[in-house]
Length: 260
Length: 176
Image (cartoon, rainbow over all chains, first blue to last red; front, side):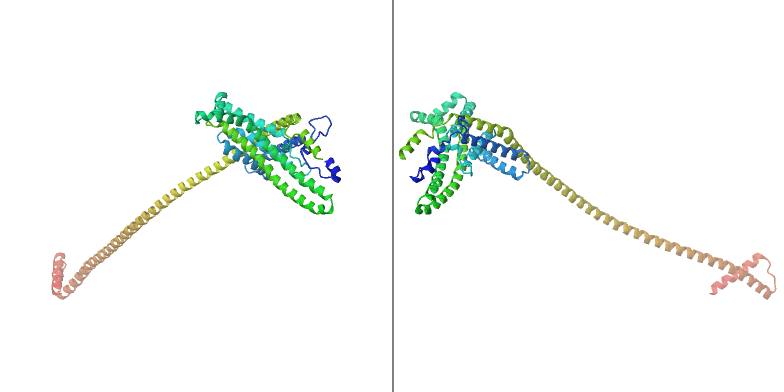
């Protein structure tokens, strides 16, 4: 940021990967960075909100309980019951944690003063994808046994034998590489690109404001587009949290299913 | 400027994860999961179960109430019908009884009338007899006295006297 402001005289220094690499605010303490702080802030906020809203568990809910229940039953019914079906209840805590965790960390991208989507740090989507990866394989192995589970993945039943030459590598790659990779990269890339887009318009607008008179006139448009994109980002943030949880539920459902 | 940007991008590959962040990520997620698993979902599930039970209980209660009401209605209808037939029979009985009482009363009145009439006629008869007897005695005495006065002959003899009177009266009746 400092560099950009310093460079105003010479030209625009476009935002890039460097804007996501925030150094620790305490020198030498690797954990004292903004993303990690936000991560724990999200844990505290989610815990607080849902503990308070679910504490009474009344038959006739208060407004707060109704709000908490709304999110909970959205995950429970829409993702748990709808997709996993039978025996979905034991996966609901995981899906619910996943959804709220991603959602709140995404929201940090547009919350004033915070304005940093935690999931634009690739480490966190990696962590979540690894957990989902472990969960759905564990569920599959537990349900069908190691050999049968791997066999079901590698040799999809009901396919002519020669096709396996083509299908087996694809299936193995899908289950063990593509799924966790796409899961994490989709979330990361969306948050990264979204934040970058906002930076471009807001920093660009700011830069234009300091330029010649002609550029000053154009500057408000950059801000207007930036604000419009903020709303757009809001939508993307919800969508990405939903997709991540939805795919996790689908993978679990697939591992639980008897037929492939 | 461009060279700087490229250099920066190469230096900061955004796809390379940081160890500290990975550790923090696992810890944060595990923490949140434990909180939600232990504190949040059980409570929400409790509320859901309680709500389902409340709704089902309410519905069962309503159904029971409806059944009770239907039973009561049937009972009342039956009772009403039986009451109506009972009333009808009572009315019928009352009419019959009334007619019987009326008949009885009339009979009694007739009997009374007949008895009174009979008593009256009996008393009249007895009085007449009495009058006839006393009249006969008196007429006898008077006639005897008169005859004795006329004939001049004492008819003291009772038997003779009585025969004379009877003959006299027979003559009197014949002549009438």
